[in-house]
Amino acid sequence: MKISIIGAGNVGYHLSQRLKEVGHQISQIFSRQTNKAVRVSRIIGAVPIDNISSLQPDAQLYIIAVKDDAIATVAEKMRKKLPGNTWVVHTSGSTPSDVLAPHFNNYGVFYPLQTFSINRMADFLNIPILVDSNKELMKNRLFQLAETVSSKVYLINDEQRAKIHVTAVMVNNFSNHLYSIAEDILRKEELPMEILIPLIQETSKKISMFPAKEMQTGPAIRGDEKTIQRHLKFLEQYNGYQEVYQMMTESLQKMYGDKS
Ligand SMILES: NC(=O)c1ccc[n+]([C@@H]2O[C@H](COP(=O)([O-])OP(=O)(O)OC[C@H]3O[C@@H](n4cnc5c(N)ncnc54)[C@H](OP(=O)(O)O)[C@@H]3O)[C@@H](O)[C@H]2O)c1
Image 1 (cartoon, helix red, strand yellow):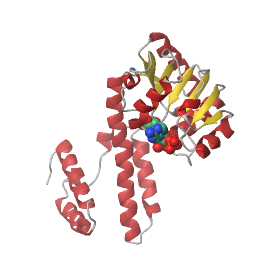
Image 2: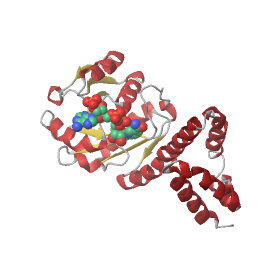
Image 3: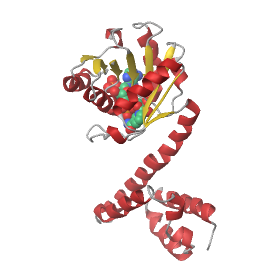
Image 4: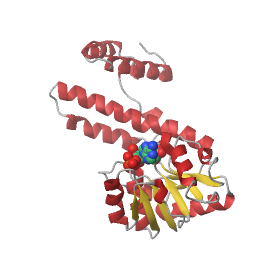
């Protein structure tokens, strides 16, 4: 398939390379920052563009991978260069597909459910790709396209994807925030973060084998109130972290019952 990618951030960078790797042709790659578009274009052999007005109507599919809040305005600008029946998707988990509807008749979503960073390799074969479209034919073609990229492809509508995205934020963004808090505390206490790594790894390994709820341990579910109070006292010096601990403890007690 001939594809153009609008956005050369984390997703644009990795997705364009994967599409190229599995045999698709990337026509153009857009970034407002010329150097970013050029960097990716060199790897994938696409034409770098730094202005949407340079978009060519030669691709079969246009993938918008810009920040969520910019999707609508980017689509509006694209429409000035592309016919209304052009196939256009975005890669956002939380943005409804019909944000593209005012500008294009054939629209959809191509959402890779993973956390991407430019400096970290993406193992696309195991990344779930959630696809949808307002048109049956496009839906089928997006599904087939996703199957060339990953072994885990799902047809998921806007409503379902929004729900999945909420839980993705919880398991990824929130747990990573807790890692950052731990990192900050240990750094300030001059203790090594590496000491927690086996625990973090074992916790995430276990949930692929057992229900997370059954794997919960710790003072909150045991009802070790004195331990909880000691932790809260220690966290008084860490602005904001005590509230996080308190809130998580209350949530755990709500789920498992307060045993104190
Ligand atoms: N990162 C993830 O883990 C992840 C995973 C799945 C889906 N997504 C979704 O994929 C999309 C892109 O995310 P990302 O992580 O790749 O973001 P990112 O690394 O922050 O890159 C965002 C891109 O958006 C462009 N942009 C921002 N404002 C713009 C505007 N007003 N006009 C045109 N371009 C604009 C930036 O362009 P410049 O290069 O021109 O500055 C940048 O290339 C989002 O919808 C996100 O929800 C992200």
